[in-house]
Image (cartoon, rainbow, N blue to C red; front, side, top):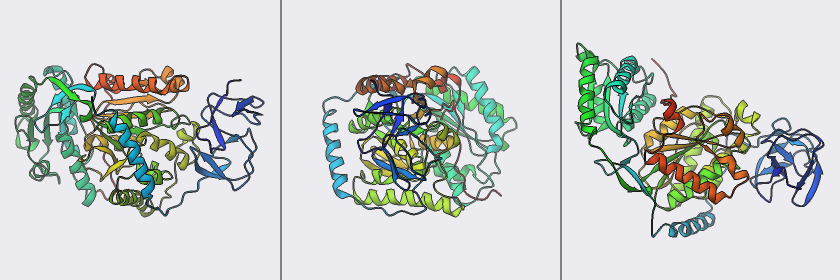
Length: 504
């Protein structure tokens, strides 16, 4: 009989229910049959052998927790009968042999793309970068001018005729912040000014904020003054009309921009998951990981963030560091975020969320081992601080939290042209760049077609290579401007900034 469970790794002592199962169901797996002794929701785990109290639960071939009690074959395994093994500290080692083996395997993947890299059509910028959209962005230096920015956004979309639209990235900061918070706000906003998806930018300040226009200009550095305009609202009797005239000038400069052929290896793609479920690490995240392997092997760039959702799986990433120096940077990335939790008197393993648990994720290790699948098996080439922009091609790890809007903003600021966002529960959110929602299961894809761009649940019944090729085709169409993501169609796009300190 056809199995109703998925066993991810040969070492696992649990398997995942493909659909909701009922007590008394007879299950076939690995040539053996057993009877369920409890109901098991879809995406949740089932014990496929007797597991004693205090034994480790193995999923993905790694421990995801320890049993609180004896668990029988056919019993539901979840947060009520297992607990995390994580703590505030851990010892890490550099496995040079594993790193070299992974790098050699990656070189074999690179050979597949030596003769021909796929082509996309994008906007070539003066600095040699590409943009996959040609938008006019309004970047407020301070939250006090958010209302003006949104009014200019509405006017621009009604009056300027810019195909890809005018977008105001409003936020509540830019003043009354101190220290690192203030600098992080400035760095992210400066990154947005330089983003290649923007063919032009209006930087709008108030005039009395901490983030002064002079200091912000210095941080932003060299720009094309015909395409980037700086306006201080307090200096103009009618700031709205003055800004409109500046935006008209920017729009005139953008009108001649055309898409030209570019190698797909010029793409920078961010990977994010949110509202995960028990299928995330089986379908959508491994699918994105296959794309990550392709993109980085052909010379492209990938960004993986959500550092708290690496806890419990971090050694896997460390074992793929291209050298000892990068390994040490990964260790520092992990430990610095753990220190952040401790400094705020929070436990590092207070995760997953209620929605994650409802979807079948029991512990942070369970979530993390599924989460890091988005990075495939690509070597880790660089580690970025919050607000840094990508410099190295390949897989980059970026300091950032699991929070969806904060992390997608950080990926955008780092240079991501688009973000592949996997979800098992569903979410409408969008970053400032096209945000491709990838459902982990067919039910979500069918129920929320207004949110979901791609159904990774097809992996449950179709060949993985075929599904990967379909995803790559969609990514190509989005990059070419031939198709919009659902968040673009819905007009759902926003930013959020990481805040740690005092507000004056």
